Image (cartoon, rainbow, N blue to C red; front, side, top):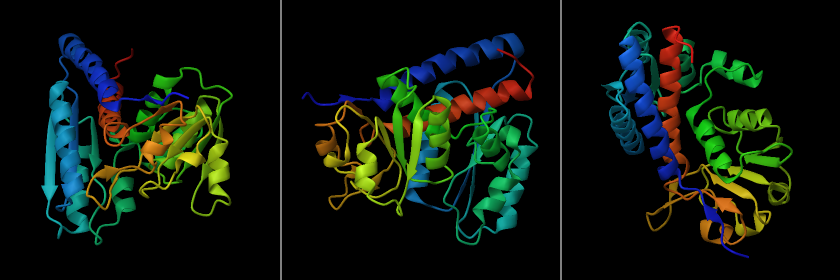
Length: 288
């Protein structure tokens, strides 16, 4: 059996940005509007800093008005909430996010709940989560959107396929399952309490791993020919970045697989920009 097709998230994200840049030019020409995105970073988490820089670079590349606010790790919750309120009320900002994780003295749920759902670029607010759960639209979180686009790179029609999502977080696992249900998949959400997890994974035509445990999913967990999407990213003992899937084993069995890095990560940022562009049009009542 030949090795799996590598689903190149960098290349797909680049094509998304090119298309989006053209849409931004058209929006500015027709309506005089520049989509505005903002990010709040609290503290000095190295991974968050890298991610925020990448977001800012991508936003500038497609012609967005981009704002970055930083607060020290000692910031109080009220200071964080004040920045959220500022973004809510800034007419130049159409979508924004608060970079997680937050320092222990700040309740992330209170912060997310304070975001105006109409500017919720990350799609974490309960209003958007509820709309998504009912199949009524809303803002889909960027990572699950990126996961779905990568799956569709391998196969456009997903109807009737069996999908297993390992991980039940509100930011990735659950919304990814909802999007796959919307594509007419039969979906199982698996997690740390799932019995015979490897056996469950082996049923999957589509396997999404989003647990944050380095190389937990082994090659013999994978159904031959399956589409495997690896959302996890951690540093191994040799300091190299690795995913939740044992890539070298899995690529011998899967039909298509995402690399780490270079798979889901770039698509998360691209889909965040798409979310913000859509929010901009919604806030200005622009259809089409």
